[in-house]
Image 1: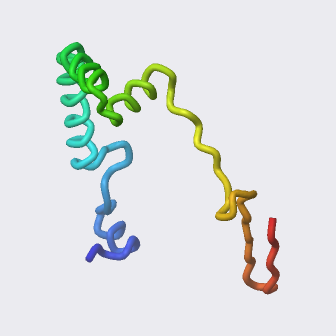
Image 2: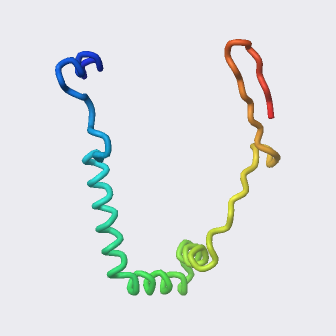
Image 3: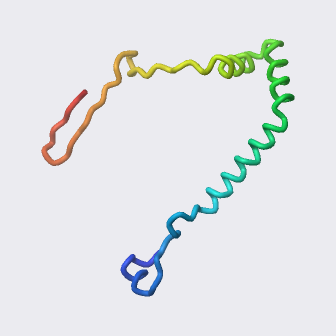
Length: 101
């Protein structure tokens, strides 16, 4: 358990990660993502050929993926549970009032 802020400051420590310094897991995740992007770009032609081949032979997921890439994914409408408007209820505490939009 970390020392309370007043004790940490009293003994000269700041406590916590310095501002501007990323957590190690954030650095590792960014490095992993960069490596995956590099590998994908190096293999983009065979990957796309495989996707096209699967679509050509009727793989519906491959067909959908290609369609989404070429025509952009269709916007998904946001509706409430009954297909109508989304109902929002705001409850404030203190005066016990409620407002439904």
